[in-house]
Image (cartoon, rainbow, N blue to C red; front, side, top):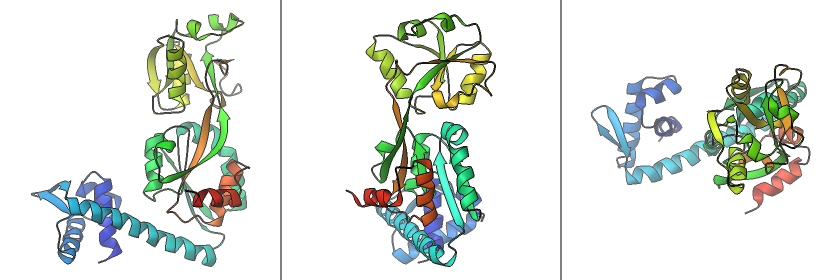
Length: 307
């Protein structure tokens, strides 16, 4: 049994049983992937993947157990390499951060600049996606930490570290009627077409909850996965935008105006998600503390051992 065989098997599963996509991801050929998995099956004496011709169509019951163990073995092997790197290359390494567009665009730049000044030899990788996607990247070992607002709490394999709270604003074009109001209400907002986040992103559930509690149905005409898209369509006067306050910059967004809406919505909490199974090098603890100063190394380690 070889780690390469386990890696080929797990990547095939990650690619929805597509041998060709797994081969592309691992920079090898489809026949090589297929052959190594078959050799693994021969050695173990069980069928892991059900095939129909050259296509893989499903995973067998024993295959599901084997894949779970294989993922753990690959993670442990990766952790061994990280432990060795901690002592043989203290200043270098890789930090993979899985996060949403809003965090990557509006919150992380200053932290990353500070981090790269301290650790110039550490390679930083940003993986963007939905909260569910980025949480899966950490649980699979493909990323070191996840930074998001939604969905992390649904992944029990992850330790959740609350970082900061934030709220929302309404963005409109200049001279919009809402700018004349002294008291912005949900009832008034519901009278306009609304452009906001996709349901899985950036506290959208808090927006829906607020309207539902008020007995109102918002007229959401367009949703997007990032704040820049929302602002673009607000500039085109297709509707008013509801977005994270952190995503509005008066200097950059000169063609828009912001109205505070924190009194209308419950605040959301951005969290860092870490897998208990992943080994964290020292510079990862430092990055977490830079992002959220109250999360020092001792605090994070304490959280990692809690049940």
